[in-house]
Image (cartoon, rainbow, N blue to C red):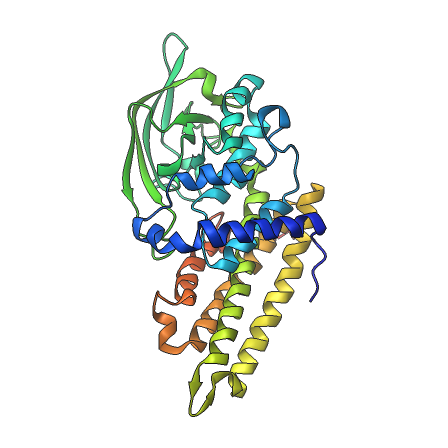
Length: 385
């Protein structure tokens, strides 16, 4: 089915990204998986390519207000190649928008040029050991010093993506106690340098998938954060975090449908080459029916995701529609990748085969960015239920 979401310039950009991935990523990817993260130089190279500062104004070294479609193409090409660019998508697509929206002119002058050049990479620390989807339960504290010059940050975070390759971490911390009437109040965003005294890395968590992207435990022990590094207004973090969630969930949906499409292609290639009982696996009716079902599911979901990309481009993507996209795309991807692995037989369970890595990688899409259960709650509320 022909797609119409991208124009000629964007398709030309796709070829540039495809060539970059083929030359700079694919040959080294097994080493990155073994190491648990890509080398820091990856982000410098991405900066040289001009893709780390989408949305950053030209005065700060960025390309200006550029369509999300360019980011979507990078997600699609990464999935097509069966790789991840570390936590690039999180830094550029999920964390940077907070700075673009909330940073003061002085903060933008300090941070944005380095981000655009790939010299500063971003991560965000929300989840805590006892606090997942319930962000109102955050306990990490940031107390203002007596002289009012800095906050003193104490606490711990977990499941933090990309922290070891980041220079700045946006930390959600409690600057005032919650009240019985407002559990969500008192939370603020602090931009913390990862080389700050008292900022410590815990374990690089051993995930079942996404092996080439680090996921960390972090701890903060009397970390001094200048008041100049408060992002936005004190006490308004909860509302700020909600503003970027539709984009974040669309990102996950784009990734899910792209990886499902890659799984179908992998399975198709495999069944055409693999012979059993004297003929290609592709010759069996069951194989044809399974792949026909998978192909149709992917194309139907692609139409939904493409509509979301257009809505995001127009500034009209609603939280409920983003939830619908994420829910459907991630659940579909789980079904399709599983069926495609089954067509590989025993080889599908071997990590040397891309389908096995894809199977492990795709599972988390139904969890992060808000679980499928949270998406259903949002959709039901939008339905008036």
